Amino acid sequence: MITVLHHIGGERVASINGRRHPDHDPWSRTVLAEVASGDAEDTRVAIEAAHAAFPAWSALAPTDRQLIFIRAADALARRRAEVIDLLAAETGCGSHFAGVQFDFSLALLRQAAGLAHQPTGQILPTDQPGSRALAVRRPVGVVAAIAPWNAALALAGRAIVGPLALGNTIVLKPSEESPITGGTLWAEVFAEAGLPAGAVNVVTHAPGDAGMIAEELVTHPLVRRISFTGSTITGRRLAELSARHLKRPVLQLSGHNALIVLADADLSLAVDAAAYGAFVHQGEICMCVRRIIVDRSIAEEFTARFIDKVAGLPIGDPRDPATVVGPLINEWALSLVARRVEEAVSLGARLLTGGTPVPPCYPPTVLTDVPPEAEIAFEETFGPVALLETVDGPEEALRRANSSRFGLTAGIISADTYGALDLARRLEVGIVHINDQTVNDEPHMPFGGVKDSGWGRFGLQFAGEDFTELQWITLRDSGRSFPF
Image (cartoon, rainbow, N blue to C red; front, side, top):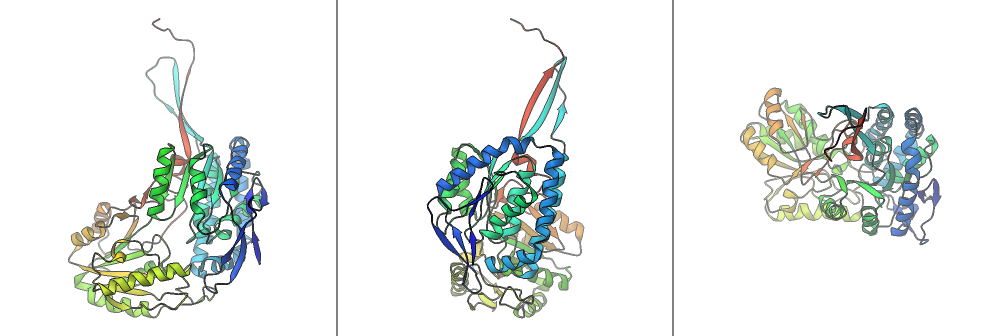
């Protein structure tokens, strides 16, 4: 059995309170690891270690910083098979999406190596004679990174790599569901790469204890930025707490994403895109398609072909390469999906396929005629469930897509790419993919949403806007005269 300890100040350490808790395999429900159960006291020690490491790390020569990220990518690459196995064992992630996460993480590290030599400022025009003005970006200090379990490797990496490459130091709080693949694994990779002790720290915790650690991270005066990926309800609490302490959070929150299939769509592409977008990683991705909005003129044919494809998607052990829909992360998640589907049906929704739990899995499920008062119609439901809606034309599709309080991502399938581009510009979302489904990301892209899906953008080319301070500096060639 694996023993998972905190990584603080370059050392693997037990919790100060001495407690541990089990980390369960979502498929077998067996205990995968015993994990250190951290609390606010461990978090304070980690913050102090990050703060102590900041001066040396931020002052390191660009070449030296670059080499650490290159070596980290090499260290991670050597562990591919091990990491993919761990993603299955810890988070129920099948081999396809585990590979997607792994490749994203490698690209993230390799691209981050280039940030060390990016310009950090600019010369500004000034009307003051004999004066020069500069706008200089500098790292903020300690960044608190709070990462989720659902794409544990990629999303923890996204939370820490950009800020770290810009010269900040990190305290990472992984989810209690993924302390290894979303936490200590990253500390190990960077330690092997030669990252100075304390530049990345990881504090793990038991179920139910996330709040105390998050509160310490937000309120501690040495923490200057918060990076959070998770639910809107938790993000709102963190934003309120951050505001009271005048700290800027970057929030990537929930989505209720629409895939719009217009009358001129390639139906084969539309069916395949909808099935992938809705059911990849058993729907446990914030980017997943939740609503499929189809033009009425093609709805009958699309629905028949879509249901035929969805009903045949294999479910089961995530270690089996044939599996598409694996186990949900825990029993609570399974019961929530089942309850919301049952409620929708009781309110008049029609079940087209699926709908009966196969613990620990939930089968790929499609509902139509879902009434607006059903929870599944307006709340993000992390699971393999898609809602099918029929509309008359692109304008109604636009209204339906924009009716959600969320605004993360959307897809449009249409042969008219220019018309789809016009539609995309009017969608109230942070990301739109034309002739593709909604689950896409690259390390350098501006990833993030609008409305209740959060604010700020992840992506290495945009991390400097949130994880550095902009400082105005003036210098004069000689003295100046003053009126008194």
